[in-house]
Length: 222
Image (cartoon, one colour):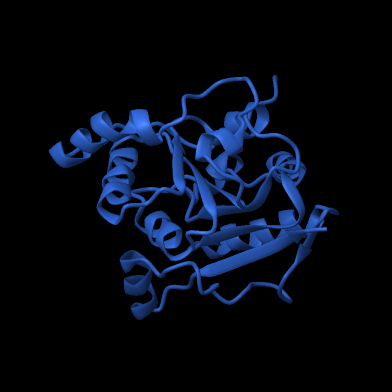
């Protein structure tokens, strides 16, 4: 049986609001970067040289916009396939006057493989990816040894990868996969405290009130 390539998403149809569609149509030409199999010049894309953070799967973009607004010294390359989420983030980019976000609407694994040069990233954020919680679907999860090895190639020495999930068995899997990668070093004895820069989402706050856990895992590139 041929090896199934990792994909960072499952394309689901979602309703896009009128405001999201307007932002998508008006702002994607300015803040979007078309997918290409050629390496991306990040300095040209952002118009400056700065620390670069890749975000894989930003959902509706609330955390992304908050982080970018609080850290204007960094540039954020944000990858998402779902049009409503892209439109939502673009709307927030305009409302907050953000200049340090660029969006690639494509599969993040292919973006990593073809568009990003080795040692080009200072950090990677993967917040609440699809948990594929049924055991027979676990193999579809994004965090697998192959992807982690690719992330390490794209991270600068000292760069970090930060994953957060509210599924304990996924957190356990990620901790094991990250720990098995010789180029990564854990920043905590096991799970990390939520870093100050990652805001707690409304969904997360509700879950915590109901006694649900959230696990942050932060490793650095050796």
